[in-house]
Length: 53
Image (cartoon, rainbow, N blue to C red):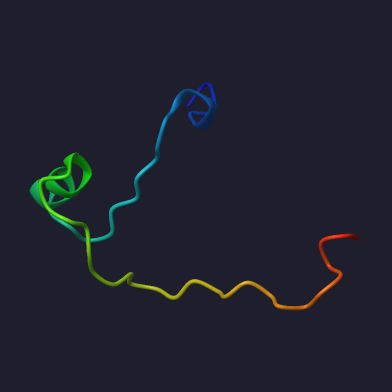
């Protein structure tokens, strides 16, 4: 890529193992997107004072 895409996009979608048709229907609102991610996302730290450093 010659330029970063983020400043030029309203959204960026990552599709993990879904068919093209399923992703299309979820992105266009034909069906409600649901399911489980194939990995776990870390929970945010609850420690206080880190944001002010």
